[in-house]
Length: 334
Image 1 (spheres, rainbow, N blue to C red):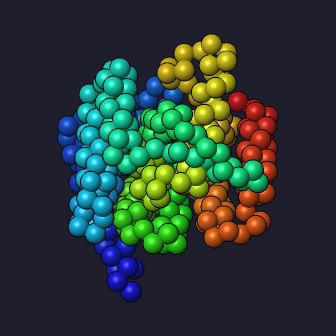
Image 2: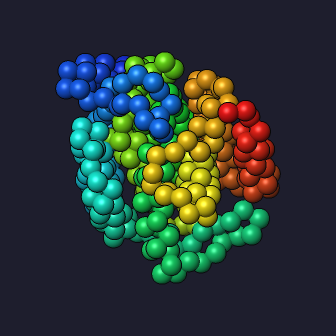
């Protein structure tokens, strides 16, 4: 009963914070103006995700005594650094160079204290030892997911909805692992994201902003490191839970790089953007991504429990779903 009351309290508190941020953003003209990448047509306040950051960091601070002190403090410090960088970018745009340098520093500090992935477990194939290469993979994983989450925050409800679904999956996995710190961090993300969605569901009154999209990307990137001792399963579980954002951002990045396009320039070629161009409403697309995240979360949880049906569905079913969705989106009239 206590957990339900706490979840309700965090959700309402987050919603109230977003309401206050909405008025502050309007007053200070912290607005997201439409451009060629945008899926909205009117200037809209941004930075509402600051409420999520406050709820999650506040929860982490309250749990410091119950967690490994160094690991908890590094997550809090690095999370605040990423969020502050994002907030500065929301208020007055920062250069990509500054963002890259700070994010790289955060990734390096996280690896130094939290460790790195020394192996990766591939469904149906087993564990693959990474050795020193694991440091590079972990660095790219943290830096990549931090930015991929930001890239995917492009339509009403998608970033908050996937955060809610992904956090729920991590709550079950952390509970199974007996990791209280990861459980309560995930709990806070789920509750605060739900509170944010009251204001961000189509039609959105306020956007999440870089303050939370990069913070959530960083958090979901380091949850595997916080949940296990550099085990191979941790990286795979983290990848599976965020698979929709990783696939959409990753495939789009690779496709544009092959075409020698400027991969950092604004565009409308993500799968979710093509679905919007094809006539689908933001709410429908966000629900699709939420459902697919929950599906991956269930398979991840089943795999963590040793269920034999999970690996075949993961390695065959999820890629097949993505291929079918991509072909369908390509067939839509623009």
